[in-house]
Image 1: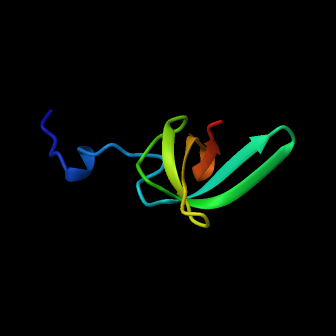
Image 2: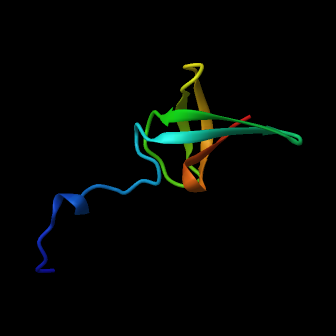
Image 3: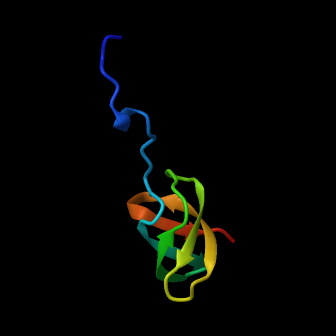
Length: 74
């Protein structure tokens, strides 16, 4: 009460923002493959998010993890 509201107070802060570079990681058994990608939408930790693989151009879905890592949903 009595405080000035700034524009930054009206927007939710995300762990990953649309357009951010991310690391896409896929694991099956003991094998892990990773690739660079771009976030299609914004999201927070453990959200299911669509990202675009930079190399192939394909859109994949994965869960947001720490350090802008996307763990691919199988």
